[in-house]
Amino acid sequence: MESLYDEILADKAPEPAIYPMDLKGATPADYATLAETVDQEFGRLDGLVHNAAMLGTLTPLSHYDDELWFEILQTNLNAPYLLTRNCLELLGRPDDASILFMADSVGRHGKAYWGAYGVAKAGIENMAKLLADELEDNTGIRVNTYDPGPVRTALRLIAYPAENRDALAMPADVINPCIYLLGPDSKGITGQQFSVRSG
Image 1: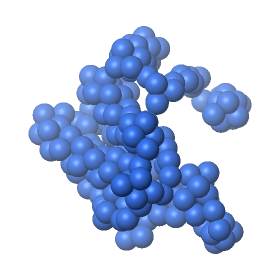
Image 2: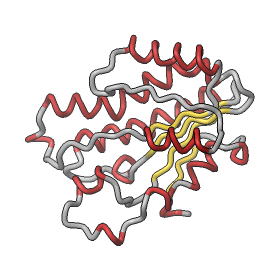
Image 3: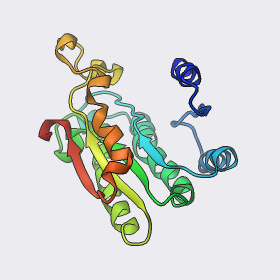
């Protein structure tokens, strides 16, 4: 994040801000403080991308560690809910704003051993749908999900340690749909589930 911050400054773009937050341990008050800080610094929010995730382990539910279950749901489901809820007023200030939840196929089709991660991703899909429905007629906020497919990330390495990483897409290879869904060209598109697999 710091190197990206420096790149943005070098390009003479508006000065960005980095706000470190431990999603596993953050309280509802921490999310309110974050939204207040964004309000004070920028006065509005044009887009919100929920990309942070914690995988945990691939384990049968009968053997799942309870504390790990709660940590994963906190990071992957509760944190996006709290951040979104606290930022809705800021997102409502521009005529057009976008919320994008990063999705995963195991959240759309349950799969053995994916435990809390799969449950959280399924919850994200449902939350995005209901939020899009709630906001569609009375705001300019659109809400969508995007599954980038297999990407060479640290999380993917945990899930598939023996996989040929050279065959995987790099994050830069799957970013264009995110840019589209955040930008003005996708105005009016809301409540949709997008996937790199389906184009």
